[in-house]
Image (cartoon, rainbow, N blue to C red):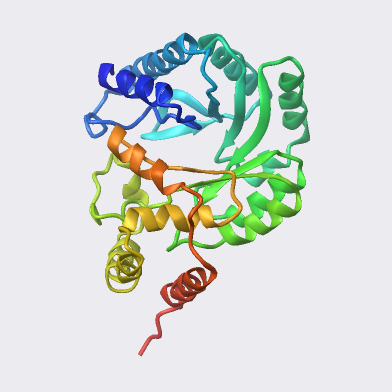
Length: 303
């Protein structure tokens, strides 16, 4: 906790604007925690993050958070969603109390399309905006099953921002959502730019059961690693950059608002920030990567 706090303080003092802080990853991410302790530890982490941010109110920091899962509540090993108006409103007010400041962007976390279309819930969220608890409203899309329909619904319902997976190996439905979002002046926040470490030098296909990346299809990961090393890595090398940098520059070549990266050290974060230098990929490289995506996602012929 103390090391994470120092990293958070150093990031803020360096001038980097933090758009999101994940409170669930770190050196102890794979240490089993008993169900009765989950809620306590989750709240301890939230309170510590809130305390650091509240002490640095003089800095220009944007606070993004999500709501929709009951903190610390597990049923049959799975986190429980709750999008009832009472739960959401109370959760937002508690977050505001812990932070001591208004939430820049509140996102519904992995809501089904029925929740996105829920006008009563949307009205309650807009009331929280009017009352000063929240500045902007958005939807964090997932899991990756009905993202296109859910993203289009969020845009149609007037949410101000959407978050979705977008990277070299997973270009759709991201490209479609970017086009529709631009047409409607919607904030576009992308995540997983490195495709669960496939687009890095730390490639893995086997993750522990408590690692959220274990939800990835293992066959997809193995095929993605092979394809990356033979078809994408040479492109990065020809451009004089590594895979991590190519991955960030690819995403930022598109007209998105920001990209959420996973950084566990200051050096890693600085590297990703330096990739956001305005010098992105030209149209020829983008077309090549689009063709490679089409090749990668082409159905395998059965002989």
